[in-house]
Image 1: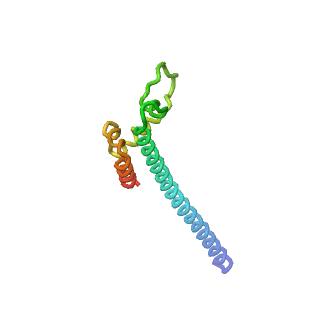
Image 2: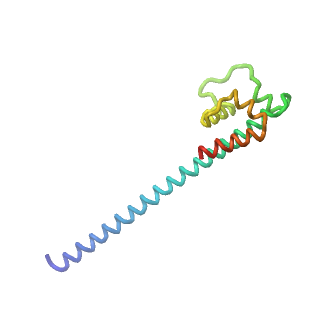
Image 3: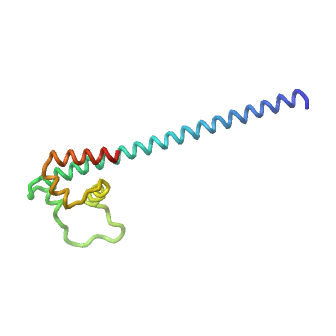
Length: 129
């Protein structure tokens, strides 16, 4: 092998090494970004769950004739359109409560006391964060 061929081969190997290094760096950055996005999604979902449950407690403490309380406990008559039914706010609240390990019957009674409800929701959301 001549000197020129050896130099050409070593230059090619260095080129492949730099390409491999840049690919590895890109993969590492992509993986780190995916982890950060996943973490941000979890934080965002946790905050939405926290504020949704806090609002649920707020509405359950309202008097029965106020519009949010009427909407929470009321039923709409008639039929819904065909196809996938849109999710109701109460469906989200029930999902959040079951994710926190609570049931709807107990929580309505507990939410009447603001301090207990807030400490319970804060404790449950910090457990799942």
